[in-house]
Image (cartoon, rainbow, N blue to C red):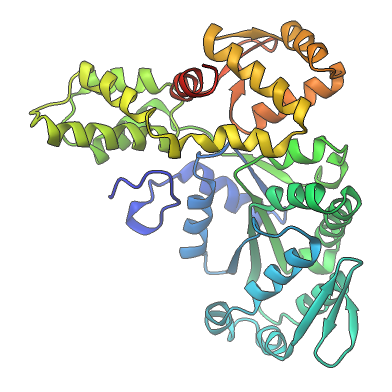
Length: 385
């Protein structure tokens, strides 16, 4: 297994997530539509690649990343292009007799924001109706799974660069498609992304459009899983020092383990070490937080996602947490007043920071802290000061 930091992995480089994969497949087989819920860097895309690369016999799978879609128009283009992808068609032509053939006859010229696809013969169809027509043409005992990565980012893009109404329309159409029994019997949608769909739609009161999704949490590794992961990636660290490493990382997602192991491997070579010790782990962590390209997206994310006064509130809140470790809910409400935010507005921003993996209130509902001590260290050094 290669130690690949900060990128989605496939094949032999994927650390198996048996529990999560089992829950996703169970949801699909039960006829529901999974929403993979987890903060960034937890490994959602790698899990989706695992499903894509190793589908069960009764399913055919298409994966589409819609992160760069800034309108409903662009979203539908990406989805239809994924369905018309040569590799997908060649792989599934025998399974979907008329479906793949009909896709190849589509000459899509444009898809309007108002909701119609303009075909090469100048006919226009409502895109939801066009999609439904295509699905009806599936003649197979194989069910189609469409995995949409970065769907939440697409919705946020549309809100920011187009209109809330357009985002609501796209969400409403998806809900309608999911609840159409003719569609649901032949297709399952899987939604995921590096930001939380719940936090995005909550900000413009659109939770009702996703409350039918089957939310599946992608959790950090257990201590035993994390220990086995470390042993796979690093052959020159003893048990007691693995325990120390995991205590320092605390939030046991693959990214932080891989990042520190990467720095330990470098130290091992540079210093010609025979074995990794605690002081080497401490040095590796300090080296890791010097790698701004692995962390700066955490700052940029809130700057892009929030309005100026909301960004200042979120930044101040994280600055305080990076210095004082915890913050009580009454304190963030007072901080919201400082930035001219109503209590409900401040609460939605805090919820977004929880959904997106910055902070949690797991130990006490009224007390917040950083998820990752490593991110906390980086934030204190590079943003708060």
